[in-house]
Image 1 (cartoon, rainbow, N blue to C red):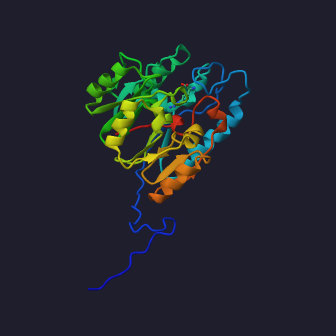
Image 2 (cartoon, helix red, strand yellow):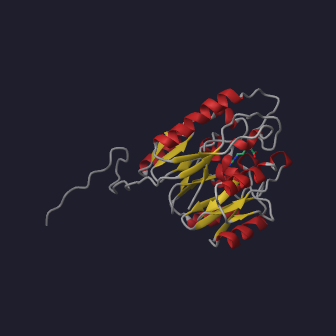
Image 3 (cartoon, helix red, strand yellow):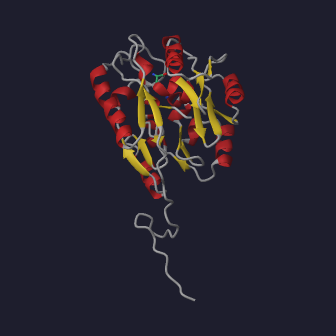
Length: 288
Ligand code: ARG
């Protein structure tokens, strides 16, 4: 019987399993230029209004992200930024869109409440007909992450637990609630990133014990982030199924991603990090 020795992939000495083939799913993305960006209030531990921040540099960094999406073959739509809403650049918080249905955002903090109706209006003018103004507080895709046909839902700091049921009823997909416990990781998308329909990476300590157990059960092979990776916002990552955009300082995560056949791309938004946001926060996925 002919026998051939399987060759271990170069960066995985000892491993005989071939790297999975990763393919890009072209995405439609909504973004908002940080023309009025500033840090004028503090609603998360990253925000220090007394320290200087600069809308000019924020814009240059954000444009790099927008260009990168386009170079990778994704479609970027834009919403006009509104003066006086410095956090509006974080489009992920603007709504949650699944199958063309839009669950509008209702913010926890009064400083951001006007963003909810502003984003909702954009969807209406774009011809979306199934737009739901929510009864309960939810901060859009900051706390709602779609993984295959399951909606992972954060709570603990921003999104109201009752919103999870509202989202499940509205979208008709199963919602899995996860409790965040570390104020540095106040939105789900700062503690967990969806890599493909079945794969995620996350920082376990950002979650309550029960939620950690749920994540272990759902994703036994998940990539686990170190505190170092989480602290540089490494989990605020965007995956198109092949490329994973994440801060270049998240080196351990990048290594682990490469070993699974993903292509990590370092993208830095230091100015926006002063508001507690990263690449994924600037990205609202328009599904369906
Ligand atoms: N300053 C904003 C806030 O605290 C940052 C939002 C970041 N967005 C996100 N999707 N994590 O609300």
